[in-house]
Image (cartoon, rainbow, N blue to C red; front, top):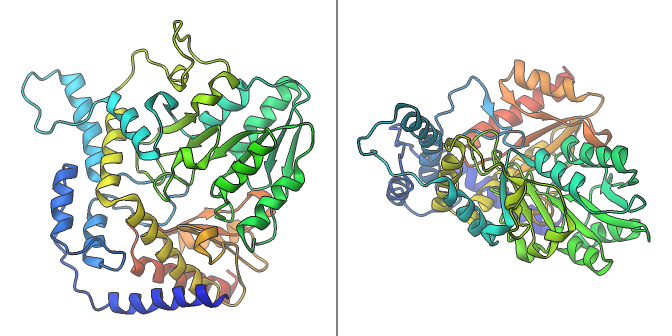
Length: 430
């Protein structure tokens, strides 16, 4: 382990020992509005990654009361109270048609787009709220204006939703697909960029890849890859399903043509919501969508603006407000620090192979591992059934094992239980 990373891990482990001595108030302080949340959090002391009183209050905002340790935000998130409540109240007012004043003034659906655009530093005309990354990826794959011989270059780490869309494109229009083989644990960003660049051929037209892989939880250098691809004249499609809400996304700095995300994962928006970003300069690269009535071909043409429930959009706006109260930088730091702690213990368990880099540059708030001689089911089933830990099995790219998420509602006590469970499974090979 590199000396710099070792020091980070030792610092995290030392901080965790101190956390055990913190007395946490068991009173639940559940905020109804972002303003109320900010007031409560401010009363807990500094907004710091090691202030467990602060994070205990953050955990209180999530009413989840299931039987499992929820360490699977990488698949689907759980909603904060105010996000859930905003949808319930919106539905009630729409159906009951009460004329009395609302107890809380929630944002409207239009504000959801404005808040989303502001969060990723885009123009509202460049974003559409979809159902998830898979829907957004299919919109892109089937709508791009390509010639039949134009090749799509992707990787061996794509989620099924980010891969099957290109398979459909190939079946419908004949566009060939190739994959960059990302099997070995990367050493640095430039090594990864060189792998992508070496795979480009004269017929390559589209480069589609994950910002953070769904398998090994590698954080790919998306900005550097997009810069390189642009020099080769490629259309860039970034699957950010595991990005927004977990790490900072400055879309203009990233420099991609298209970006998608399942915001219900790490941004805690309502189930069935996601996003599609189309850079203004890429609007003419894609067709289809709903008729824009002679207006500019913005991302909005991929939304259905007919009759629909406003509740998910209201919840979407409130989720961004919730996120902004805590702040992207603090959320990213907290998740990465907790993941460092988890990884530093997993790597020491005999028989465990850690697939996620220790480096923060190449990882974020998830950790993937395998246990020698065990399939994904062999690992995930006892985690769930015996130890009550929710994880996600590794299936893509020939990997076998489990992926764990470190979200803002998770605690170090939960991580200790996960580490103990994995240790017992590895020791018993059960």
